[in-house]
Length: 168
Image (cartoon, rainbow, N blue to C red; front, side, top):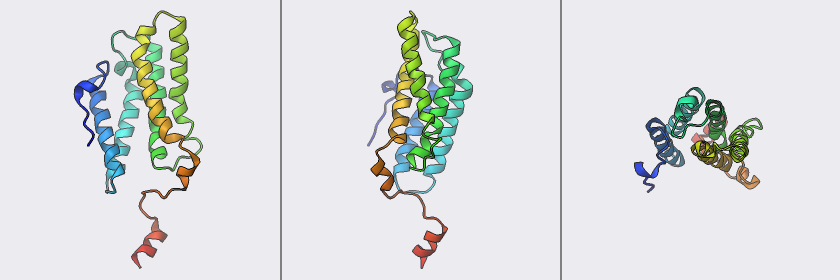
């Protein structure tokens, strides 16, 4: 069983984000179990997290030392785009445009690294850079699997023609 303690989560994150990520982790574990309702809860939590990053990135990423406002806003947009591409990637139903979404956080992490090397604000960018790298790593893990994964059977509910075959 996976136990995550409150103190194990980085202290530079807001409590709202910590609770939302913990619930999202539990929903991901529940999604792996063959039960009903897990996809709906996981989708709702992903949209809530993406909306929080998109609308509230300016406030969520305001932790001491505070990065510039433009980086907090751009970070919120990039992380929201990456999180939105996570559900189709986990369900192995990603379309070609879904594969571009995780790249937003990867490009943003590269921009943060280059900007941090050229300026003295590297300490202020470190919490945002770590959060961006974690989101990019998680989203890229699911979005860019090896090709043989797509040939494995998925755990989705059967479609209507398949349902008739199974019920006969």
